[in-house]
Each structure stands twice: as C-alpha cells, then as structure tokens.
Image 1 (cartoon, rainbow, N blue to C red):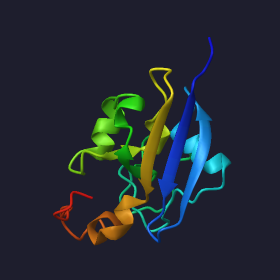
Image 2 (cartoon, one colour):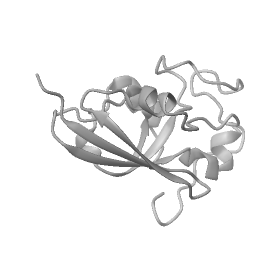
Image 3 (cartoon, helix red, strand yellow):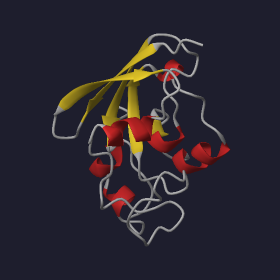
Image 4 (cartoon, rainbow, N blue to C red):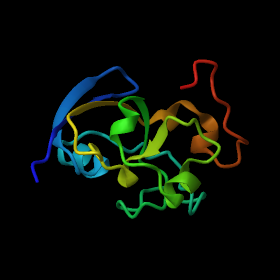
Length: 139
C-alpha cells in the first residue's frame, strides 16, 4: 500500500516555524523528535506522577508531549481512551503527540501544530496552582 504524504507544520511558543515531510502512518512524537524539534517543556508536570518532572519516553501515559492542533485534526488518528484521559479538562485542540498517527486515513494532508501549549499556563507547570484557565482565544 502506497503511503501518502503528510506535511507537518509546527511552530514554537517563540514563533520559530518549520515543516516536516511525513508519510501517512508516522507517529507524531517520533517524527518531531527525529527532526530534533523541541517537543517537551521540562517544567511540565506529568499526569501520571504530578510531582515528578520528565517524560515517559513515548509510553503515552504522562501527558508532557502536548501539541495544539491548529489545522488538519481530521488527518490525525482519533483519540483513544488513554489520550482522552491525558487531555481531559484541557482545550479540545490539544493532543498527546505520542498517541497521534498522522495521515491516519492514508490521504495527502497538512497538519499544523503549536508545540508545548501548556507552557503558557502556570497551572500546567505547577500541579498545586489550581484548574486550567483557558484564554478567550481558545488556545
């Protein structure tokens, strides 16, 4: 089966941008890391161990590899039960990169993601800060 092309556009909180040529079926986390894109904010607290820092190496349980999908959400695999747990009480556009497959329907597509969206929220970095407060623009 021919794997279709997916362009993954990303931008960082500081405004840096890039595009990665991917193939349908690629895992978003692995794709970003393979291209040396800074996916993690080391200050992010884990969902599974909220008073611990660091990621789970792609096991899909910590919630530290979050991205905000700005375009092409339909070209990503649907959220599974674990990802729904990781992203509950967070904006609907947020996904766990380790749980996302790009080009899930094997069609050419463009997916645009904003990296480390949790970095803008003190309550995402400090589990004692209270509930997530989403800005009016729905970021």
